[in-house]
Image (cartoon, rainbow, N blue to C red; front, side, top):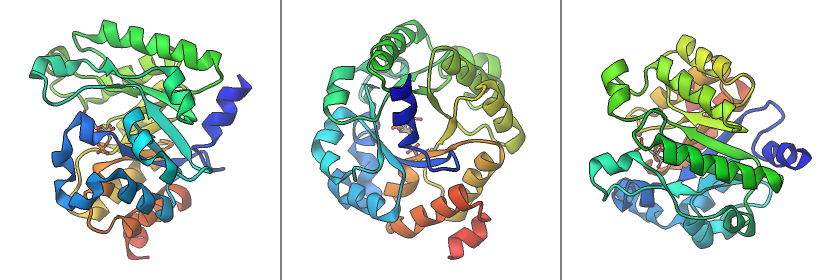
Length: 272
Ligand code: FBP
């Protein structure tokens, strides 16, 4: 619908690319994720910084929007994710993301897009597919785009493919996301430009964004990875730890923006 298309555009610049800041870690991983730079445990502090540095949008759970939503500038995209899990659960139950809010909540909180995770291949895939279908159906009815965090995961994936980042499963997850009606897909790095390009192809026109991952010691290493994503036809990145675990995130965000939006070589972007 027009509503879906208009709202989706709020995340992307004219080049069709976006840098989105992710902050659901206090819930999903626990507050220890903020220990490297403890002041970022307060979402208002880090959101203020990422706004100043120029990110195109943010991704948050509803509770964080209640805490820090006023810091999100009105011209940036606000993505609200309605599923999560804690790391407190027994390991095998961490293969399910539960629904923790409703589309109406996200709309009331000012969302421009609604997100949900599906762990493709997990024993709880059925539950997450249903959750996603229901969320997508409501959201699309109201004219809101849906974002799928399409993460292949679980013992079956490991057994058959060795790792969850094998491009064959990441590509499968991206395809499944597109076929279940996602308007934007967030997924893992597959290790090379060539394989990530296949993931992008499999999504058949639905924008694919990188899921940041653990902080790299050398910031340039992360810029190089994002550069490869862009070269592969990816539409940008959703980045959490690589931003909020850095002492001084603003110059790093600016470098990311130069790589994503200006095609600057990683080393050049890091120097500027
Ligand atoms: P990062 O850039 O920190 O990886 O954030 C992206 C993200 O998808 C978060 O939204 C989420 O909390 C986290 O990664 C999930 O990581 P995992 O499920 O691999 O522990």
